[in-house]
Amino acid sequence: MSSLKDTLGRTFPYLRLSVTDLCNFRCNYCLPDGCLEHNHKAALKLVEIKRLIHAFSQLGVEKIRITGGEPTLRHDFTDIVQTIKAAPGIHTVAMTTNGYKMDQCISAWLKAGIDAVNVSVDSLNPGAFSLITGHNRLQEILAGIKAGFELGLPVIKVNTVLMKGLNDGELSRFLAWIKDQPITLRLIELMETGDNHDFFNRHHVSGSTIRSQLIDLGWVRIARSRDAGPAQEYRHSDYQGRIGLITPYARDFCDDCNRLRVTSLGKLQLCLFGDQGIDLRDLLQHDHQQDALIERITSSLRLKKDSHFLDQGITGNTANLAQLGG
Image (cartoon, rainbow, N blue to C red; front, side):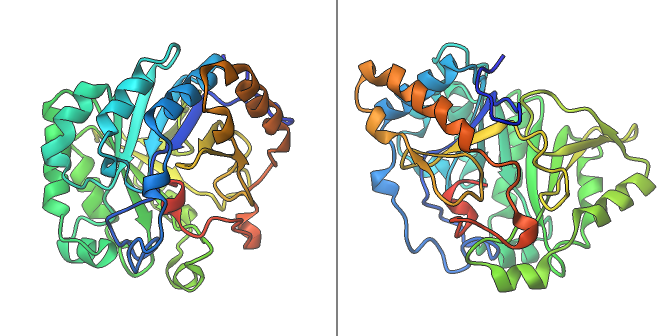
């Protein structure tokens, strides 16, 4: 049981660790001009990551999700996975990727210790996919998903950002895709960040619209596990796959928040849309700093707010989602 607890009694068994803010895609809702500014070379070193994970594992964190930017752009990505996997008490090491070279690399990821993969697929239409991401790599990514199943992954989660006029008409195509595959399709409401205000206003579509369609089609909501992400999951007796809805603009979205974030520069983010991070990096330089690191982490939880205030148009310091991997 996680001993990390905030003033509202929420516990945190789940940490999302960004290992780089560099991304090689140009998704129109995140980095439409490409990744012009980044701190890739200044990201946490392997030994710093090891000390960080050991501190969080002592505090009861059981699940680590490796994010970016695009985390596989780290040349030592598999070393990072192995290091996290070796930490005592960590039972799940997951990753989120844009799928770049997934078909070639997924075997190495799994051998290193990855337990779960989330891959972004914002459209199953090659033209729309290219328009959204700036890359004509849909078939490569689909091949990577297929390879993952062939190598023994029991389920793969696919992240799809819902966007009016770009992919919101593809629900039936996505449902047909997951009918006979153990894919959990996570439909994510487009979120406003500091850099995408106009895009958000043009393309935001409420997740409640999709929820109503799913319920009309016979999909039923199921309970989520303690260390699960923010998705509300739905199942259907005729489908092998599942649907997860992530609706950050819902009134109660933050009530059962169970995850913390650390940036690639070593800042603890209590919320994806927080105003500022709490620097941990100065306490990642020596093994003997573990007690001080644990004290800083636990004391920081007193600052976690009850909501992200997205519904009020407050986006904090998050200029784009590549900064923290969503």
